[in-house]
Image: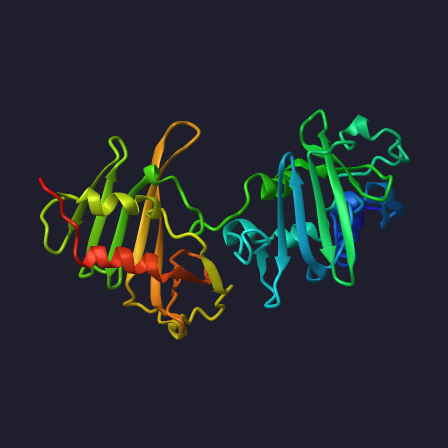
Amino acid sequence: MNLKATGVLVLAALIVGIIAWSNVFAIAATRIDEGSLDDYTIVQSSPGRFSLLENKAAKSPWFYQVAEDDIETIRVWHDDSAVEFYKSAAHTWAFRDPEGIPPNFNRWGGVTLLLSGPGTRRDLTAVQPIIDDPAQYGLDTPETIVDVGLTANRAVQFRLGDLTTDGRHHYAQVVGFPDLFLIASAWGDVISRLAGEPPIPKWYVRRDPKLIVELNVYFGNPTTEDTHLVSFIQDYRTNEWTVIDYENDEEQRPIDMEVWEPLIPLVPGPENMTVTVPTVDDQDYTPWGIGEDSDAIEIRFSGETERGTRFTDGVLLILGHKNEDGSAYYAKSETNFIRQPIINLPAEWVDTFVGLAENPPYGDG
């Protein structure tokens, strides 16, 4: 056989090999719905022929699995803290306490998906068929216990125990079953934080009055330059209050403390806020009198990071009209999230500060 013919045969064999090898991955793409090629071994069964063998032991088991839509209640106990959420008739989620208040969507989004069932890195049943000694894994007095209430009076409860030595996983157990699992510590941290730092919406939190730096009343759209703004300002270093009507004053002026001092406990916001509508999906707030030209009240407050850096944040409440009995104003919090509830702000609180903005209580000086 001459060299030219040999070269042709070698080239043909190489092409066949490439096609065969490519077909392995084409087969993998159609067969592997979950996981990755790590779950398979490529075996050459004969020259030019390859097969995929599934690695049974490599597949990670599910800790548990439930349908996300079947979840109706969530209770989390972590250390000495506890929190409970429930699904309302409108299929939105709310705290049990404070009753009916929806969780902060920035924190809540994806929680029910996480709780529908995490995968695990691997189970330990090959070396430990049952949990003979829960204390060995911190499961006798776990830091975190979660109860997931389901439809048809069903429930799943699980426990998160100690971290593994590398800190990357929790030992975990579904109550009622002896199997030991490893759950990613990041997953456990998100769930435990629900109780340790409940996702209360920012507009509901009432802060220490000493942390408030401004209470601003906007007559008109707060985002436009022609709005009429009146600010009540506190110096956080001295806790002294001043007032400025930007339409009529050139600088801050002293405030009448006989008028203002009794109101300082109310500056962080009203108590007993409730929710009329948990979410307005179409973002049309006009049925509640909330539009582009609505008045607003803003509460700005200071904070400090763990590193000691001071920052200022705030809550802007866009006002609508009063409810039918006149006891509250409809309002919404101005944030970047589309799922905004309609809040009931006590009318007495709104009228008090709007009235003071209309006629600022200037003091001597």
